[in-house]
Length: 294
Image 1 (cartoon, rainbow, N blue to C red):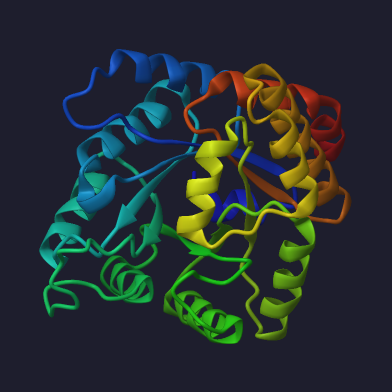
Image 2 (image 1 turned 90 degrees about the vertical axis):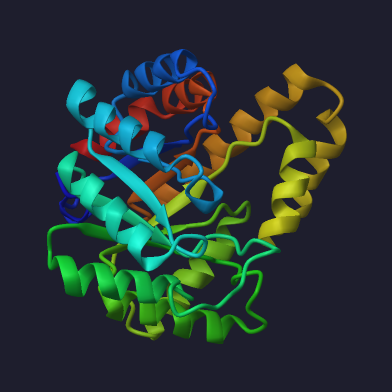
């Protein structure tokens, strides 16, 4: 099933993201993670793509298993900055062979030693999206990333939204946000993109934080700000793992409740391959999500 059809159905959707193990790592643990996430019955599961395509084969393998074994739509990530256009074309063929029809098209992080840009490589995600759409027609449903606080490499938010509009005009069917911890940031972003006539569905990406040290590094790389309320939680519980886990689950739950209460219809949970955390959050929301289905 194409994700754009799910997002346009009018129902609230709840999806999850997982990432493949590195090449050479044992897949048996991953099989258990997939099974436990699938047991939560998310509307779709996205599968990330390692830097430089380092997990590309496993991305396709896992996405295919999600669809074939668990009958859940899979969203396969595809990054282009470290792969030649020929490599990307090969990946698209493999996706077609495995009946994967949903792609999250991303530029990816630029390696420090990369010769970039090169005519053999894509410079922007919008170029990748445009090629997929022009060469493959409507065979794939194409998603793109968006940044409520602005892309870390873009100095001005208005310029970032102009680049986002290019993605949509290139053929992007929906957008998924980077993590954010202040819902007002998302609401402001949604108003600003609406003013630019960006009308595709937006999926709100929520990251439950159970380890304050890990999130600090992620925020530095992404440019995501931590609101004072969250900083207070991290300061209080950072050296108490069980308390930090409980507080992180509660914060993410409250964040999602507020999003749903304010009309956001699509939630994407960055699970960090932790089915236990995902299960607790979805358990906290069980009656709320059930009510939204009515």
